[in-house]
Image 1 (cartoon, rainbow, N blue to C red):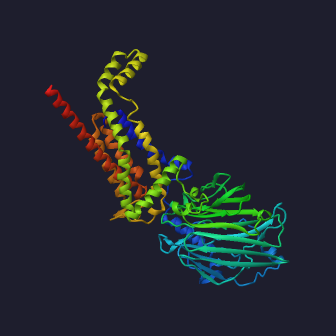
Image 2: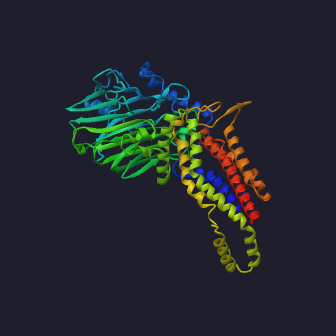
Image 3: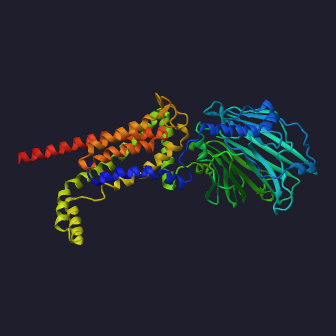
Length: 578
């Protein structure tokens, strides 16, 4: 390395990666921990056992869903007596209504008029079949009614019969369709639920109409049972899974760990949305009308660690619904910036893109990322192009850093002489040192400031490559088959991650090229080894980017050395001519 400031720069990069897990913990994200297959399988077996009766009742009409990572015990009241007293026909046989669009497959049960399956047809699970957002025990859009005062029974419509106006619905890419379900509760009371689906998006327009209820009735739409696991490594979903809401211009979230107690959070105000998320997918409910709404978030750890259960509910006072129909938008789809931003409801805030400044840079990079894919239809090569482009973009800054480091190296003998001359007078030493810097045109911070200016870009890139759904199950070439996971080459039963080794190799050669002081040799050998351990479990997309960036660093160092030698040669010729 040229001098101590370059050494500090390398240490700073190492520190950034070391503190990254704590940064993400502050942001509500944890670094993935491997969940043993035996634990995951035990959880799946447990859920299957718990839900055997329910699946038997539903029969073969609902296709097998993803192994549930979480299950639920609803916090709703038992509706049996209430439904009976209101005259609901509890013995009516349950039927399932299938809704199919180019992007989704929904299954609605006439028992409660709730969703029992939400599949995303454009995304596959690691173990086959489309991604399912509802767990085995899950139910979506379950309605409850209660008094505004909190007195009296809660009318749970989860098992009340809703009669559909059709038995199935198929919507083409350029169309839309509507399913209407009606529950007659007796005594002049009824509830109508309508679902309007669109062929071009993941948003579902939901309308709720009450008849025969007073204005003080509070209607809640619940999502029960959490959001299902979708990734091969359960830890990818579990470490970021949470219930959250955006209200009163602020995002609140609820996330529980294995050792936590069950948590319940209730809020009121200007609610933009509430929902659940896992690594790459979200379920969000957003009210369409402008009125005060209520939000309930719930989370609890399950016996089968490290699995957790999350639920949420969105509610409003019926008297505040002036149109006669409570309208909400249900978004059940991927956390893709272009998709969530198209609804204009701040859905993009569900994505973990960092602090405000980092988030803005990350959103810009995601747009560029999507644009680049239109010309380079392989995300691996898009990342390579990103590495080259970012290196070119920050070249002036890094070149300035190298120049500053070189100047500092040149004045080192003079600085040493000043330290020896004024070793007993620190004040005079500081004055003379600053005078020397001014005479030689050296900025003591010139080597570090360019690195500091680059940090927001590097943090934003980290966010992008860590959370971009575009990298999910996206191959590059050869052994890299999923850019969202660590690359792996199986050798004697051991998964060897090749990209971290290549990245550290490039870092080693670049360090060797710049090392001037033999005392720094230990660091040249140590830092690449440290980086291997740091990057070992990172996604292959992120490591690929850093590998390309380090290779470009070598190229820049070669160019810098060439220009330096050329400049020295020119200076020598000028001296000879004189």
